[in-house]
Image (cartoon, rainbow, N blue to C red; front, side, top):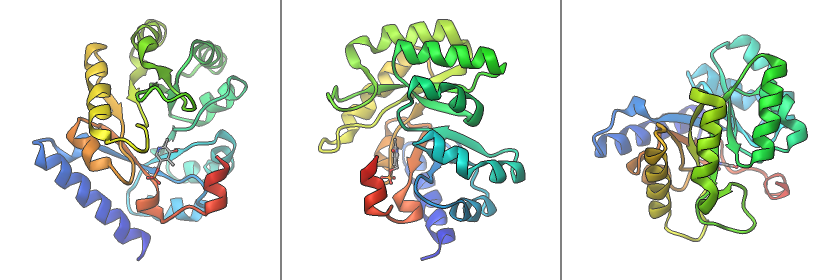
Length: 227
Ligand SMILES: *Cc1c(COP(=O)(O)O)cnc(C)c1O
């Protein structure tokens, strides 16, 4: 199947999932997760009007996107993988949205980088919604205090929350918990849902879904297990 028909299929499924709960299809942005896939695959989607892309590694994105950006000034690049503080400057330079703000030291590093660049990307706080020991994201018990501190510091640039529920769980209650937390904090943005569960996420209020394999096909096994 060509990339075009996969994109059409995902768009139709997003529209249907939104419609089923009385939402406008345009209220859900599709972030095409292009990690491990070449620039040519991104270019093919750009040709079909896709504009939001997600990458989980800073260096891979910096290698892949400069030429694509030069050709499409409205391209929006999202960082969806863990960010080390020593990469904060590169991330602030290279990304439009950093979805993985999850600890005070990273908040400090992003603030310093933003000051230096004179540019603040949009930011989302990643919440470890299943409180899994190995997973990135701020712990649930600390999340709201951290979110409020980020709101104080970054103002309207803090646009919402992001999560990756535990793989073995029914994702729906986790998505609803993240939506409730965002509502309590007065945040409108919700990045949740991947290839396997984006319709469930839309029903719970997702404003951005991050879809990789359903759009691009499976990632090479070695590359995806390496991160
Ligand atoms: C890889 C990745 C995705 C996309 O996953 P698929 O199952 O391929 O759709 C979404 N979010 C994050 C954070 C990822 O790392």
